[in-house]
Figure 1 (cartoon, rainbow, N blue to C red):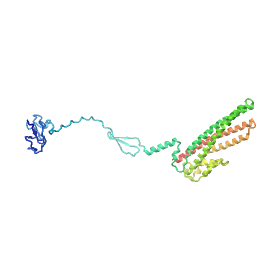
Figure 2: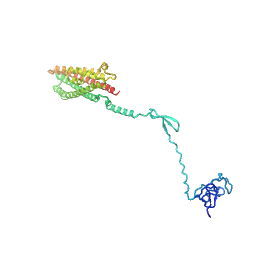
Figure 3: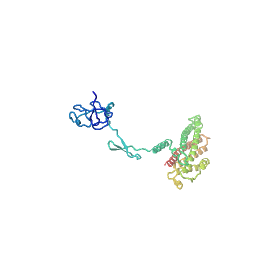
Figure 4: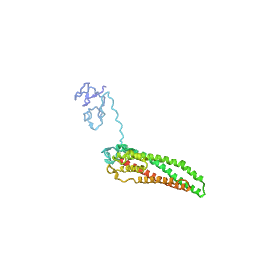
Length: 358
């Protein structure tokens, strides 16, 4: 039995192989249909796609379920995809303003505003990092961008260490001198021997005195270098008219009598000129550093005590004891001088560091 064919447009039955439908004129050139491709759900007779009622039994086609129509030789349509499980939407945020310090973040799912952490500009991060590194190194490298500035901080720190080392040796020397006097007094009273006093004297002469001279010379050299650099920094602060020229601030330390006056002025000028508000006109009006005064008074008094110790001589046991007492007093004044010098260097460095980093 020859399969029946139908028009795809009107559903009319075809009896031949004409390329056009004799009922509606549609082109049905290759649309041969297999039997029962479009059928009535009641009597299963072929029906057209535009029919509202079955031509065989009169049943309304709108109420029934009709199979899909496909062309002959065409592959069946793919099965419908499996239903995708419903997933909760991921909350999304929208940045209202990017450059602001505080960002307002809007949750589009819940229509609420969330305040985010302030964004830190890259420039501020670099500045904070640079400042932290400078603080770890004593804060002096942060001033390299100031024209004419001589970094005095590290030199001052080394000078402070040398001064403290000299101070420790001075304290040990004071103890040795006092112990020597105790041994000499025992010998004079007949309760001790001279050999015990001589052993202490040898320790003082062979060990403590060379250490005192070495650390003292090292500390003096570093202090001179520090004072020169700190004094020269006045030019970087806009103070060109200095009361002591640069060369004189170095030479004055080695000229007798002059070294009792000029170096003190050099350090005080460095202190005054480093004042945050110091200018070319008013820098000399600021008060001097009191620690410099303590430093110089202690140094001069120590020199006087050393002279008195020398004048006592060592002809007799009593004279030696008096000389040791004056010498111990001189070393005590040197300890006071060390403390004042360390404090002076710290205060001047701190003021200059603040001046160039503000």
